[in-house]
Structures are given as structure tokens and as C-alpha cells.
Amino acid sequence: MVQARTPTIIDAHCHAWQYWPYEPPVPDPESRGITTQLLHQMDVNGVNHACIVSANVRNNPQNNEYVAAAVREHPTRLSQFADIDSHWSKTYHSRGATKRLESAVKTYPMKGFTHYLADEDDGSWLYSDEGREFFQLAQDTKLIASIHCRPHHQKVIREVAAEFSSLPILIHHLGHPSASEPAPHPKLREILDSAALPNIYLKLSGFYYTTDRKWEYPYSDTLWLYRSAYEHYGPRMVWGSDFPVVNFHMTHRQSLEALRSHCSFINETDMAKILGDNLYKLLHTTREIQIP
Image 1: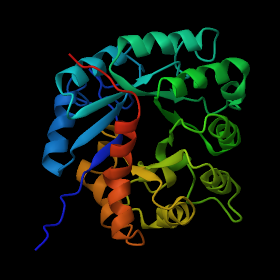
Image 2: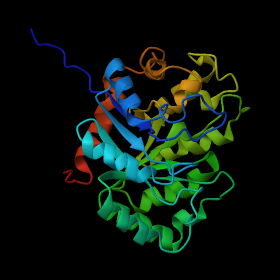
Image 3: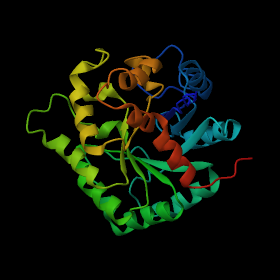
């Protein structure tokens, strides 16, 4: 008898902070988001590996350094997507982005980078001369791009994806559609149109971002969005927990089961790809790093 393979589960979207960065305040700001908490949740819930999306946000200006240290300590469990010029930084879309990325690659054990676009931004910098130089370096260095964006950014992201076709681009939280958007769903359509680019992946994370009923697990009112994404992208998606922010809305385990148990329209083979196999392949075909 052939024994079934134990599924590989890789978290494509989580964070780790030395100090809780968000409102409202929490009673345990110095421990709620630290890496030992993340590793504990991974152990309890059977998650093999996690990609920490660094975010130098509020009280955490050295988050890249903090996450890098954790990756060096736990290289088989954690990978880093370093924060490069996200909208909260003083260097957001300013000159020298390519040099800052080059410096980060030399400094951190990063497998990719993350960049958070401002909601009000039109995204045009991404395809400017300097933006294209930035993405050229990312592609040449064999990084993974992890992008926080809104539906109106999708057009320019498609332009980037078309030019830099060997650069994997992971879109945070399904690209932030809304379950309450009225037909014909133009914002969702922008996200679905990006499925034509084979190097664009959606993160199946943050179910609660798509609904006003953020407490209503398992978010049955949002499942039609995930079904639509699956119909267009197929298995070209990856699961993410959104730890530790997830704890405001549901448990770490529920972030996994919202997909695994409740997205029953995804077949078993594709589910394995989304839960870990896709990201395993990306992590092993992108930048090779030496971790002391």
C-alpha cells in the first residue's frame, strides 16, 4: 500500500513584530506578535514553514532586522520578504529605490521583498523608469515580489508582470475585493483580469478584509469571491494566515480552515498546491541564500 504524502503547508502571509503596531492597544504589546508566538501557532496547527512579510510600521522601524535575525535562527521554518519603501516609509517612491533593494539583498537573508502601495496612489511609479529598474533588479536577483495593492492598481501590476515575466508576484489578501460590491463587480474584474499573467499569484488570506461582517466565520458571504478567483486563477494561489492580525477576527487555525474546510469547490490536488506546494516550488527556484 502506498502511504499518502503528508501535505506541506506554507504560510505565504504573516508578520512578526517586537511591538504591537496597531490600534486599538493590546495588553501585551511586547509579546503578541513576536516570532516565538508565530512558531508556536505553526507547531500547534501543522504549518511547516512561514514567509514573514516584514513591515517597518509604527514602533517597528527595525522590523527588517528583527525578522532577519529570526530567519537566521530558524532557517528551516521561516523565510523573509523584506520591507522595501512601503508607503509608511520616508523613502516611498523616492529616488534610489534600486540601490536600497540592492543593499537589502546584501544585508538580509531575504527570499523576496514586500511593497505596500498607498491606497490613494495610482501605482504609476511601478512602471516608471525607476520602478522598472527596481523590478529588473528583483528579477535578476531571483526574488519573489509580495505586493499590497487595491483593485485600481491591477492594471499597472499587469504591465510589470508582462515585462518581468520570470518575477513571481504575490498579491496580498486576494487583491482586496469587496463581497458587497454591486454587479457587474468592476473592482473584482480588475483582479480577475490579472489571471492572464502567469506570474501573478493571489494570496488566499484575510477573508475578513472582504466583508463588513468581520466576526462572521467562516465568512460564507465572501466565498463567491474565492470561487471566482479559483475559476480564473485555478491553483495559482497561495494560503496565508495574516498572523498576528488574524487574532482580531479569528484564530490561526480558522485562517487555515476557512480555506481547507470551507472552500469545498477546490479539488484535492489544487488544494495541496495552494496550501504549500506552489510556494515550496517558488522558494526553491528563487534566490539562493546562505544563512550562517
